[in-house]
Structures are given as C-alpha cells and as structure tokens.
Image 1: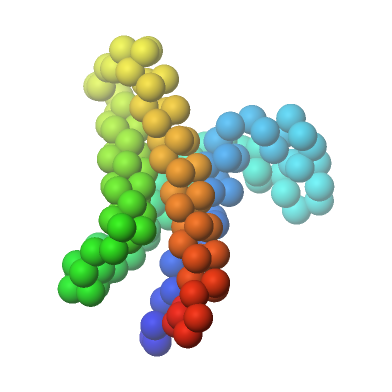
Image 2: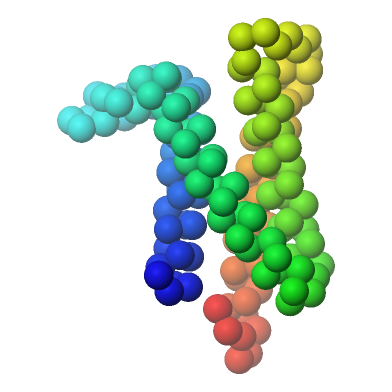
Length: 144
C-alpha cells in the first residue's frame, strides 16, 4: 500500500476513534442521533467501548510506524508539540485501560483527572493539528 493510502487509513482511524470516544458518553442518545435509522448502534456503550479499544490498537501500530520517521526527519517545534499531544492521549488512554481491569482500583479523583486529561489531550491534539495544517497551507511552496 502506498503512503497516501496509509495516511487515509490513519485519518479514518482517528475519526473513528473520535466518534467511538464521544459515543461512550451518552450524547448520541441524548441528542437523538441514535434515533436516526442506521445509527442505533451509537447508543450502545459496550459496542463503542470495544470498537474504541480495537481502533486504539490500530492507532498504536500507526504511531509506532510514524515515530521513527519523525525522529529521522528531525524535530520541529510544531512536530514536538504534536508528538507530546499524542503521547498524552496514549498514556492517559493506557491508564484508562488499566482502570477498566477487574482487579484494578483507582481513586475516584484519579479516575476523573485521567478522564479529563484524556479528553483535554484529544482537544489539544485537534487544535495543534488544525494549526499545523493551516500554517502549512499559508507557507509558500509548502508540501502537504
């Protein structure tokens, strides 16, 4: 598969992770998206939970593939910020996975802090990605 196809799969994976992540909150049932024909599955917490875990495994493969490429090219300030955002998403996601194990116990305050941090890193990642994309478009002769 060529680089363009892999980038498309990466972007679709990230979109699906966003979708299933928000589907684990009750917003799709609350705002009647689940009532749209074909979207009833969006209100199923456990289905979205399992999909999110599977997609996260795919994401980890992609990030493991891209990290050596980023190191090889060198770090730009924007690239470093983007990498730190991804690291925050991954680390808080892994803590959330550990929290969901049957024999694990985390204090309610830690659980809430990790949940908010995970959501915060996702929002920050989106803002940094958007900023980098807009900056790349305004640079003359920039390759996208």
